[in-house]
Every structure is written in C-alpha cells, then in structure tokens.
Amino acid sequence: MASILNISAYRFAVLDDTESLRTRIHDQASARRLKGTVLLAEEGINLFLAGTPTDVRGFVAWLRRDARFATLEVKESPSHGVPFGKLLVKVKREIIRMNHPAIRPQAERAPAVSPLTLARWLTQGHDDDGREVVTLDTRNAFEVDEGRFHNAIDWRIDKFSEFPAAVLAHRDELLGKTVVSYCTGGIRCEKAALFMADAGIERVVQLDGGILKYFEDTGGAHFDGNCFVFDERRTVGADLCPAGPDAASVAQTAASTA
View 1: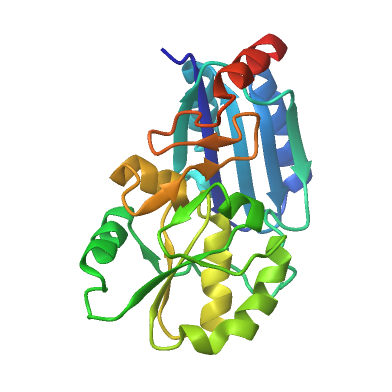
View 2 (view 1 turned 30 degrees about the horizontal axis):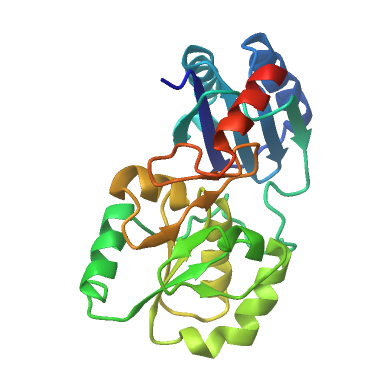
C-alpha cells in the first residue's frame, strides 16, 4: 500500500504579500517534512507537494485558513516514495508563464466543463447543444507524447508561452466548434481558455481540474496513454498511480532520498 500522498493544486487570486507568504509557507511545509515546489506570484499560487497523508492534509488545512485559498481544490495521487528531492518555495512573475498580462484569471475565471460532462460529450460525439466538440491540448509536446485525449488537437508547442501565437495561427480551424482546453491540473488550460475567448473563439471551456481530476472522476475514458507529471514518477495512469516502465525503481530512489 502506498505510504506517500502527492498533491497538486493552484488558485488564481490577488496576492500582494508574496514574500512574507513565501516564508510562512516554507516554514509550515518544512515543519511537516514535505517536499516539492510551491510557486507564488501576484496572480496566485501553484503547488506540487508530497509527504505522509497526515502531514500533507495538515498543510492544506493550514493553507485554507487564508481566505484567498479557502476554496483551493487539491488533486491527490499515491506513491511508495517521495518523488521530489527537496522543498522549494519561489516567488515568480507568473505561476504559469504566458507573457500576456492582459489575461487575468485572478479577476475572471474561464467557463469550465466537468470531467463527467466531457466524458459524456465525447461518448455522444457532441455537446448538449449538438455542436462538434474538440479537445485542445495546451501542454508541451513531450508531455502530449505520453498520453492525450483521443484525436486531441496538438500544436506541438515547446513551452506554454508559445500557445498564444499558435492560437492566432489556427484560430479559424476552431470556429463553430466547442473547444475544450485541457492540461495536467487545470492551470494552463484556464489561461488558455481566456486567451482563446479574447481572440474571438466563441465557444471555449476549460476542463475543470485537468487530466488528473478527469482520471479521478472518470477512470480515463477517451484518454490514450498516461499523464506526464513533473517529478520523479514521470507519468501516472488513469488510476493515478506511477505508470512509467521504471516506476518501481523511481519509487525506491525517491524513498532513499526522502
């Protein structure tokens, strides 16, 4: 039975105290022996952490005491070892870099579709208004290569800051369709959906919670392959367990460095 709980979460919110918040978060996570990465910016928080279930959930409960993070939604997955070598808490310009400051998800959230609704749309071949549904992968090409929705659009970008130019180049191909932007945990597809709406694509929704939440709620229907994660697990399957060919050795290595 897996003894380590991995979490990923993000929350777009106005943060005007990033430096002091960085110190408090580092102290709380360190006291609970958590490892991973927390990114802070004026637009919000993005985190990937691992530790014992008690320590991880204790940290999340502490973080939610801050009204700005009270509704923080967390995606959980198990592993036998800690897939991070250390704890990092950083202040950045953006918690996910897009280089378009006019896109402000902390002020306006993009419309979202739930995993169960998307699975139903994909099964029936259209949305509830009868429109064609296309899934658009907003991740980097090497992530997409590990797994994606069946027949998903993939523009082979190397970094998320290339996404806006790709949208403008392919905009007309998306008109008249319901476009579902998706990513690992929701943060990129939220910014992506806002940018596409701003570019004049009339029917755009983000996949709420990303692939990880979709796996949790649907078991991975209509998804081919695994989901890339940015830690020593490399990929997780639809059961949210490490799925790479060397998953066992990764877990042993992670445990030895914990």
